Amino acid sequence: MKIRRYIGKDTHEALLKVKMDLGSEAVILNTRKIRQKGFFKIFSKPLVEVLASVDDSYVPATKRTASENRVRDDKEYNTAGSNNLRFNENSKSKSDEKEDKIHQLENKIIGMEATLNKIYEQIQQPSNKLSAAANEGNAQSQSKVLDLFYNNLLKNEVDMEIVTQLISVVRGKVKENVSVNETASILYNLISEMIGKPSSIKLRDDGKPTVIMLVGPTGVGKTTTLAKIAANYSLNQNKNVGLITADTYRIAAVEQLKTYAEILGMPLKVIYSVNEIHEAINEYSDKDLILIDTAGRSYKNKDHFDELKMLVEATQADEIFLVLSTTTGMKNCREIIEHYSFLENYKLIFTKLDESSSFGLILNSRRLTNRDLSFVTTGQSVPDDIELANVDMITKNLLGSIS
Ligand SMILES: Nc1nc2c(ncn2[C@@H]2O[C@H](COP(=O)(O)OP(=O)(O)O)[C@@H](O)[C@H]2O)c(=O)[nH]1
Ligand SMILES: [Mg+2]
Image (cartoon, rainbow, N blue to C red):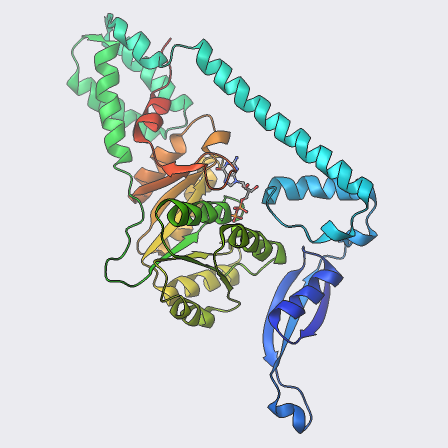
């Protein structure tokens, strides 16, 4: 681990020096303002000092071979999305750039192929297998029908405890000779009720900006989701939106949101410590909506997680959204929810529904937290791939096909 000190006339200049020297993987350890020494310099503007570190194994882009760049770009493409600005862009040779472009196109084609396959599968199937089979309405023994749904719910990763409870409620309600249709409709109602009515952002009506904060583990899609929300409120609802990021752990994270802010024509404020949050919010007093992005602090690192707690405490946001990915395993998700239980009130956002085949995690988390469901995201595209959770679609997915 290399640790170095960089000085600039402002944060921007100091961070630029970090990037030039250590690349965008550099970790910012500390930033502070320093006074220049000497009698006359005492009255000049303070300089900014940034302490940054980078792994010894890190090779700056300019010193990498083409194939190293290719492997690295694969990683960056997968973890930060195609919109993420990469620092080494300017220093690449023409052939590297060409290779990158071809590679990005390949990725896009793979994505399109997957989408086409999905559409093809849907066309092949009756539009709603569940209702098609259910419409037959054939009477069967109660236990056979219930077994079917029991298995489907478990297959879709609904917690055993919830499945058992659901089935026992249905058992109490239906007669011995029961149609699949009747059972499906009772279960459908029970599950929809459990998922609850999704709740969007509640904008303040006292003329003050509504302050929204997104929290959650690294890589679940907080920044992308924040950009989607910002774009939708700005473009579709004509709201004046200001962005703040407290995720200054990696330069690449700031760059990512900066890129979105530039594309969307919104201001972005970067805060490096908890005590800067009030000033940042105050400077946005003309905004309708302030969206705050946070670093995915691991609860396994107590100091980092405590920093997040302090930020939450200091911000007193109007609403906090805990962002969870449907691709996370339930065991992991349970641990995450437990660690974020310090939040007094929050709503749930689920991401990456496009990458997950079963939505048991949504029902389980709703049950576990008893917090309102809000948005779900269905792809990497900003601003399109976000919607208020569709309870009908989630419930049908959980009940599964019965053919
Ligand atoms: N497939 C898919 N990928 C997503 C979705 N939302 C975000 N991502 C991707 O997940 C990766 C991490 O996203 P990012 O917003 O940086 O996560 P953060 O670390 O929580 O801020 C990026 O590659 C995003 O493009 C989604 O709904 N579906
Ligand atoms: Mg982020």
